[in-house]
Amino acid sequence: MSSERYENGPAAHDQAPPDGGRGRLVIRGGAVMSMDPAVGDFEDADVLVEGDRIVAVGPGLDAPDADVIDARGRVVMPGFVDTHHHQFETAERAFLPNGLLSDDGSGSPSARPNYSEHILGRFAPAYRPQDVYVNVLFAGLSQLDAGVTTVLDVSQIHHSPEHTDAAAQALVDTGRRAAFGLFEGAGRTGSRYPEDAYRVRERWFPSDDQLVTMVMGGELHLGRQVYSRSWEIARELGVRIAAHAVGTWGASRQIFDDVARGEGGVRVGPDNIFIHMTGMSDETWRRFWDAGARVSVAFPIEMIMRHGIPPVLKLQELGMEPSLSSDVETTMAADPFTLMRSALTMQRMVVNQMVLDQGGPVPPGNYPKPAEGTPELLTVRDVLRYATVNGARDLGLDDRTGTLTPGKQADIVILDATALNVAPLNNVPGAVVSLMDRGNVETVLVAGKIRKRRGRLLDVDLDRLRHDLEASRDHLFTAAGVRRDLFA
Image 1 (cartoon, helix red, strand yellow):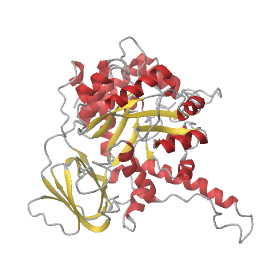
Image 2 (cartoon, one colour):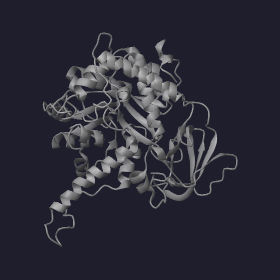
Image 3 (cartoon, one colour):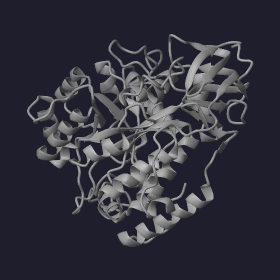
Image 4 (tube, one colour):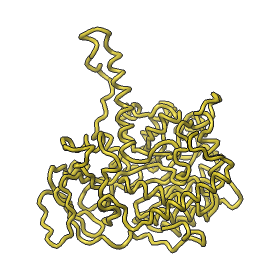
């Protein structure tokens, strides 16, 4: 897997799950957290996999002819799902540790550099197809290493059909489940968004049963003529529609209000996934909920980059649940443990203070019982559901992933609970959310194929890929006119 394979055009693509490592396999003796109430959880159980499918979950499964993975002392659970990741930006990792979404005029290190001007305005236009390929591939392998078996890649780098093909090829070559997001590019001559969707669908995604499928970008800030056409094409092709919804950036809140009321030239439905949903009106929230739209929340990025407070309390008020997304590695890590802990701690901080404010300064009223109507505190189970079940649902993939359910495809992670940062194991969901990190991800299966084993990604030359990524970074910084300063 190298960007060199793309420099002379995309390699022949194979949308079948990669061959090898998928026979009859039993994962034995783990603490199994299925995330499916009908299947349940087990302190000590097995998961039997045949080909790409889970065929049984339970204690003492009879599988004498199966290969065995010893999962004693491990947690066995579904792979994580990230419903919004700009993978093309990997070469700019941590370039904006302090950065805001836009320049707020403060003159502070948070105002400049910022995301809008520097990442979208300067770096993105400099990408060549080979840059797209290695960035998307490296990001995907990194998340696979962290147990993220499914992603929506919001690439926003479709400057030309060649850029588009590079992104699609990288997702296929990563070997994990993905939704390819066909979004806009830099608007240069040769860009074919959104009309190129027909070619992309026919060439790369002729079947919805592939490991990599398609989602249409339908950004409202591109203007009514463009977004109405992209939504129309998406529904003609039978793919979901994703769009950023940030009330203080891009499209104004008024445009979202118009669309919610049916006055924007498009109809919102259950095939829509809106990203962030910060700064939206109560009316838009209610109408989107009534229409069955889905919401992806990027808790860490929204808090850091001034998108607005992550709208988890509004979601709770309406009886909705989000999926989780990492958004941009320019500013924060893209692993599921960071996302889950951010969601849990942010919501509990706000609600806990809400409860404390209901009391007084002296005992016994200084630690009051929550008043009626106070939002329920999130639990570790809740955020695990956001990171697995809800992600699969929001991407329309819940018939094949998101839970350890017999009949679904075997997207499975095995997490080491004997490690120094976890042992002794006292509570499985608590250990995963509160204690673990990517170092605990020992084994990863995607559609029954082992992609990581004993802590090591398989069939990948990481040294060579890292060299390719560094070369891409050097090109991009030079082309963007940005000086690298390791201690800025």
